[in-house]
Image (cartoon, rainbow, N blue to C red):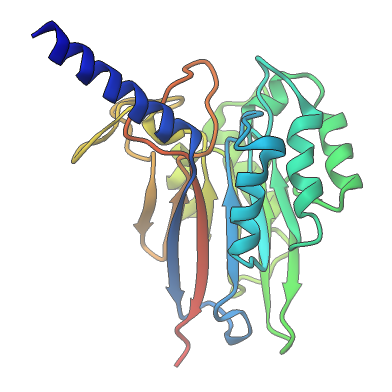
Length: 277
């Protein structure tokens, strides 16, 4: 009996090691009449909550998987670094290796704010050509002249305001000069503020922060997430309300809790599909 238990523990340990050190790719299609035809099949790769993790030597496992997806844009939705083992040089190397693959768009997470080095982080990213979105939007244009807006907000930890109030103010600020009928994409680290994004009429939100609930129970979902507590609602997948859809990445790295269970690190590949016919 003890031998059986020992074998089972060993096999489970090997499973956890493999799951925590390999990367899965989740493919998501977003179909909407609001997506301009010029952005049909536009591919976004979302990287979230990297937390100074390494996947292969010099992060080549991660870099090569992103390259193989041939993205039109790469979004980093916060917590590129980890405040507990802060290694900016290591995390920037991912960006450095991918900077000519596709345009980068980035927003802060709570860990960047916690380092008290956030301005330096932003400067280093800007020097690598990254579009650092700080409560603002950029309007991008397709080869056919169609336009859509990509906006991003700072993590609420950067303010003394109530989180809900802060997100309301910053989303409004980010899109204040964007035409109402333009397709709007928001990068925001915090998925628990989905009601704000819906209320503001944001078409597509990409978020992270929840780490997939850290431990996932098959058929139930994540167990615990910051800002949401036990058995949180927003830890993974696509959430839809009215005309808004939010994609929540399970992220790539870990922070205080070093182990994921039934919760493989993930890259999300989003393909926009115009439904204007």
